[in-house]
Length: 81
Image (cartoon, rainbow, N blue to C red; front, side, top):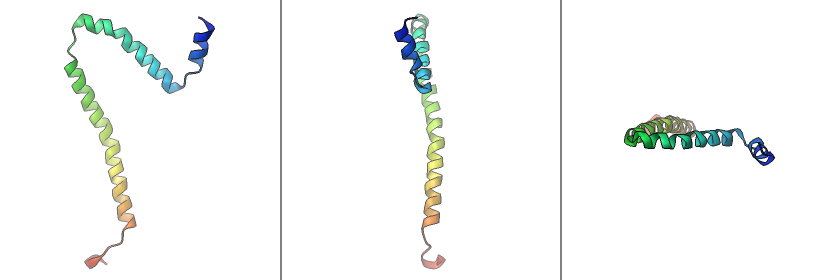
């Protein structure tokens, strides 16, 4: 293997190495999907549902943290005082 490629791969961070591996693997599947005449609408629906679930958990945790912050930092007024 040429030394330039070895130096390039040695300098990768773990996140960029994973991205490179995913990109190479997905690039190798393109001819396979073209031969299959795959229906990508089901894939997009699955990805959209997964993304909705992935963003719902941190959003709910953030809303809970904001509600707790408001409860701890405000003083009661009126009949509750």
